[in-house]
Length: 67
Image (cartoon, rainbow, N blue to C red; front, side, top):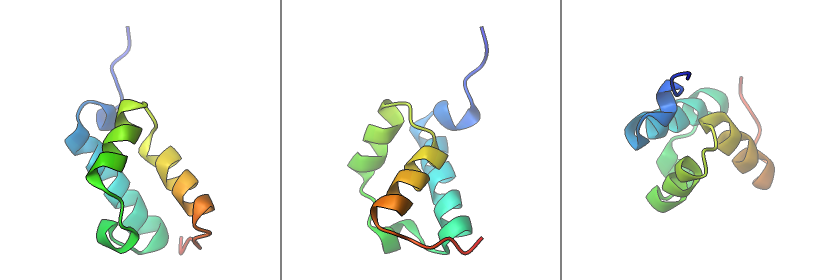
């Protein structure tokens, strides 16, 4: 049996991963994009990676990556 990726071990790690990706790729904070705690929790429980959440959100709102 393999270990879970670090970001799936707890919601705390997951949020940190999502925050890091949004700040690095879009140059925005979680407050800028208004991602609710409930929305992040739903993605975590659905076992979406932070990168999958980032990709979906970027496509949905037509955001431009800075990196």
